[in-house]
Image (cartoon, rainbow, N blue to C red; front, side, top):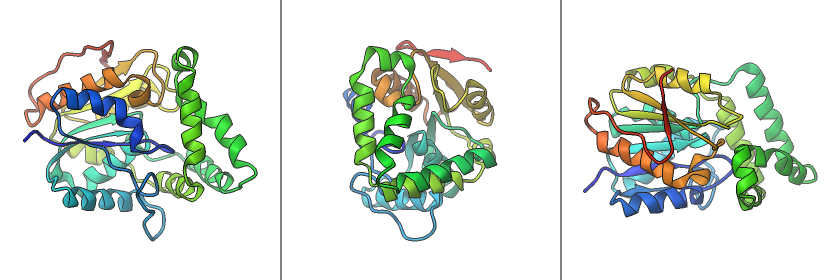
Length: 266
């Protein structure tokens, strides 16, 4: 049995954002799991104060239920932050790691305050449609918005369908997250950091810093892609993840970069 690859979705979407990438990975023969994170899709919100540690532990229980012990873990945006929390709390289970559109550091005070303002605003039924319409399309790169206008509409529709209480809870949990740099430095697993060349939320410098914290990490930049690579470039994302799986558990082997991706040295 191949190493299960667990795909963790972004905020405010659910596991369906990985559908295209998951199909491509399964066609390559990989075992793929794409769970809904707490509060999204079919997954309930946990009790307690908002914390990604709660989400990571709920994920561990779901993997136990599915009989998945050691895993390869890939997360996009919020999913990347959950992946790092999972790595901190369950390090012996992670055999390979992919971080897409996520930074290893905690939020600055300014960024955390912005998340908390968003969390409060999204609970206002009158303000929510305008807030979602104004902010959600920017998750996608300019090239995607121009060439695939159905995707901004889809993402906005899914964001509007997300439960406001879950979105607010997740924003507060992300704002309160720990710095994960030490956990990445301790990770003795093959890893890849993926960033979109048109990502307006996580900069190339931040992606380089995250890569630099990983002993066996490499950085891949996807041209013409914004913050949501699994939606914007599912085939390229699948290729990168397939190459990561080929490295596990051997951290010494390198992997070629294909499918239009560009390997970058920071």
